[in-house]
Image 1 (cartoon, rainbow, N blue to C red):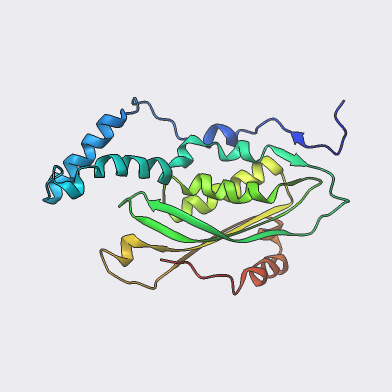
Image 2: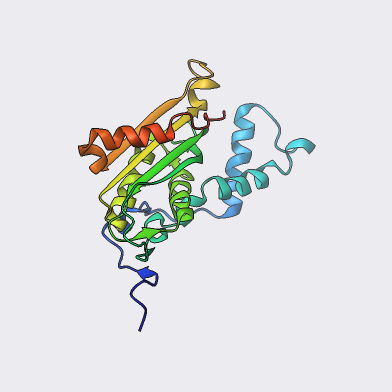
Length: 219
């Protein structure tokens, strides 16, 4: 029989079903993906057969596997293994300066920044690396920052059932720094406060004070 303070493998809540997008079309082959890159190179006005671009389609396909590896992970499942040996700890758990590397779903260009995540345990905690991995799993998809922020907070809330969750993301979007309005140095800040963090202004201020002065996003 497992000791009551051992790791808990909990049944996944409904959020698990929403963690991965439903896709009805068959996934293209690697060859089809590489051919699509060749088409884009031609459309841009270059020759995909020249020496410098000959291997580019394969490189881009490999890069996309890394950039969008979040589609192969269930962020909710990452949180399912938790621990209740906490000696009654019920204060804030904060992980700050989690690097965010994502891509804008409108232009498919990078979003680079930092995430700060906090929760108030209700009898059990999760390994801190899992918080960073949840951020990464959602970030490594085509995203908008608002949705990314909500997804991270909602997943932690629904799986761990803490007394509250707070997530703040500050990021630079190359869709507006390298194209369009061309405004480098601009960063976007989004937040999602749930439970006690939404209801208690003092607690919210304490969390924001802990993350103030954190590293600025890198373009």
